Length: 89
Image (cartoon, rainbow, N blue to C red; front, side):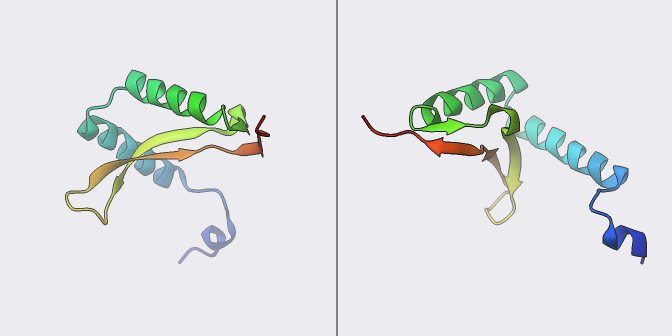
């Protein structure tokens, strides 16, 4: 066991490459092009922006797999920081 890895918060380049490869494979298996994923992201943001103020610099939308579902189905994961809720008029 490497003691330096236990105290380091930065993932190894091997782990980063492995995660990127997983995402590429998931995109390929789900048959969703990057353009379609970007369009989905824009639509989600358009709807959410009606109700809340969003931090556009920290948005992360990606495809992943859900291991607990049968067949490792793809799942859309969205991390969208909210600055504040908009007041109803």
